[in-house]
Amino acid sequence: MTYHLRQAWLAMRGNLTATLATLTTMVLALVMLGFVVLLTLNVDRALSQLESQVEVAAFLRDGADTERILSSIQDLPQVREATVVRKDAVLAEMQRDYPYVREAAELAGNPFPDTLRVRVARVADTTTVAGAVRKLDGVESVEYGAGYVERAARVLDAVRVAGYVLVALLLAGTLFNILNAVRVAMYARRAEINVMRLLGATRGFIRLPYLIEGLLLGVLGAALAGALLVPGYEALASRLTVLVPSLPMLQDRAVLAQLVGTLAGLGVLVGLVGSVVASGRYLRELE
Amino acid sequence: MIQFHHVSLEYPVTRTLALDDVNLHIKKGEFVYLVGHSGAGKSSFMSLVLKRSLPSKGEVYVAGEPLRRFRGGRTAMHRRRIGMIFQDNQLLPHLSSADNVAFALRVTGVPRREWDERVSGALKLVGLDHKKHALPVQLSQGEQQRVAIARAIVSEPPLLLADEPTGNLDPENSRDILKVLQNVNLRGTTVVVATHARDLVETFRHRTLTLRRGRLVRDDPYGGYAL
Ligand SMILES: Nc1ncnc2c1ncn2[C@@H]1O[C@H](COP(=O)(O)OP(=O)(O)OP(=O)(O)O)[C@@H](O)[C@H]1O
Ligand SMILES: [Mg+2]
Image (cartoon, rainbow over all chains, first blue to last red; front, side, top):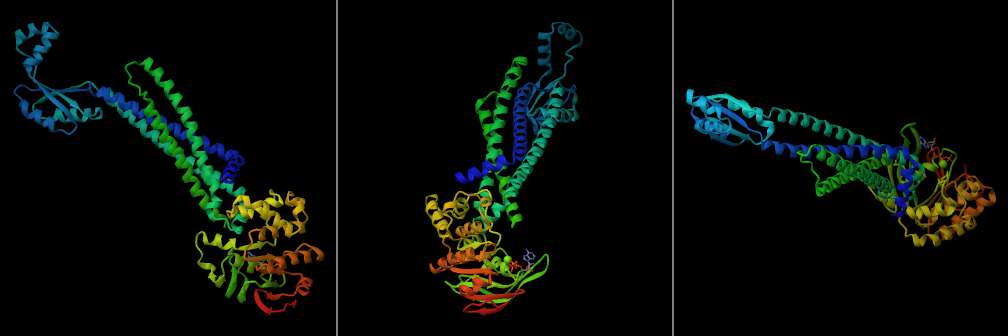
């Protein structure tokens, strides 16, 4: 085993360029992935906080069948909750908030229609729900204040998708770099590998140093990524919390540890898969 | 120990017929010369026994097993029972004599504590115990050849294949090496020696197989160099 470790170390040192290229792409990929995941987690938290505040108000025509409209709204799958506010209650509420309304009401009668207050389960569905409600018979008009929330959610969704695409590309790049690193290492030792085979070494024995190389690259890349990601994120999070106190930044150490663990697992997996594939392929090529 | 059954070997790229319908049987414990002009197919014969290449036709058996059937790790296990001395010695240039010999033990998983004793034993047998720390470049051709022999015999294989083991040696050194090979044979190892050296074949008489352009043309049980 010490022999194989030594051989792996020699292979990595012998092709420093290939080793560094692999490490760089691996660290970039893992850090990127970490940030995208953290962004997603934080955005989800912010959105769910906003969600509890987002509401669609539907103003009904005079004489509309309030109960029927209510039940059709409640049938919409995106709706979490819908409540009726009768015109009297609206008036009372308005009179309480704006005393001059009282005089107007005394002159012209209650100007307010029955109103339905609708809460959607997900902010992203607000427009859909508003559109559906507007089309219902007896609905005069619809109002919702959270158009900006939805737009922000859309933009962030796009950012997230772009992030994952980038991560996928970087991971593919990492894999190719590992294939290349192993190939270069095996090519440099082809004479030795040839002699090993003729002396009766098994394929596993010959491949082991390169598997260890892949494993070490994975572990090293994951460690570096974790070392960059965690302090970087924590600094960013604490600064943002100071700047925007209302933003509920994720600062849970356990979640971070779990994320780093997952990234490490991914790094090791990519390293191992790359070296298993490469060593098997190039050994066959050398035969 | 070795059986060739209608064996032909054609190298695909050049379409050279290196061996042409060869039938032979080498028994356990024999000492056999394989002679023939350059290009007659001696090294090709060795390649087939080691399963470096597969015959285009026919079948090679070693210890009764057809080599073509070997899958996965069986080829490696097959090679472990063969000590091979290559025409171009195949020593690793960055390793000392002792390390080159120990390499054969390392790659076949022999425990490290056995290495020292077995390596010096093998080097003593070829008379090179005093040069165990020298790199191949620091050795003469003949000494390199002897390191290669030590590496081939250190794992005490039941079959020893020597391809031109005396290729670059003066007659005296050649005779020394042949004596080493005969000693190994006396301990029960089957030995096949491919050679050009007429004087050796005539001095140390053993069964002699003669190849001519890939065909086995003579099989003299008591030796004799007839080309
Ligand atoms: N890898 C190869 N590809 C194509 N042709 C080959 C290859 N190796 C050997 N040959 C050809 O096969 C024939 C037999 O070669 P081989 O090496 O077996 O001869 P040999 O008897 O060992 O010769 P020598 O005494 O010079 O070592 C020759 O004609 C050679 O040119
Ligand atoms: Mg030859």
